[in-house]
Length: 216
Image 1 (cartoon, rainbow, N blue to C red):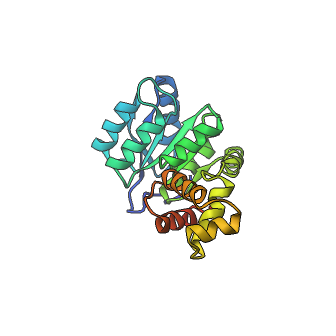
Image 2: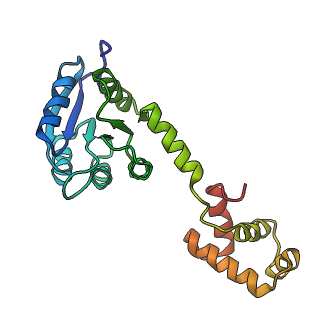
């Protein structure tokens, strides 16, 4: 580890480990404790225990196993970040499933690291997360990118067409004429858009769709 690495306040980076296998926890602890500027302040054997320990210890970084009995790492991530916002959570797991990666990142995890990572990769991941940067091994970064690209739009092509025309200031009747459909059909597309976007009017629907990049 680089000399002088710290949590930004001059002290060592404080790490909490959570894994339901004691041998794994001890192995991670040994690797991290041997690095200058990092100290393991606690260990947890479940997601529930990880949340309790995080609240009590206020670590800078929590390394969480993805799949544990009871509360999994993704749910624990959400709870830890709600109760200890300053903590950075990195998922450490043997699994590379695309949906798991996406769930972890969407829950607020600062990164996703495989258990097969080297000691140096683990240490660098802790350093990177402590700096507020994202931790993602190259193979997982590619998976996450492909997953996000492949995500379908929540709106159909016709619903997006209708919202684009709403954004241009057209009335329902004018939109119907433009798209060669009835005004009632336009209203149906709008109502479906409202439901999918979680809004209640046409202006909010257009703004929400624009925010999500659905009308580009």
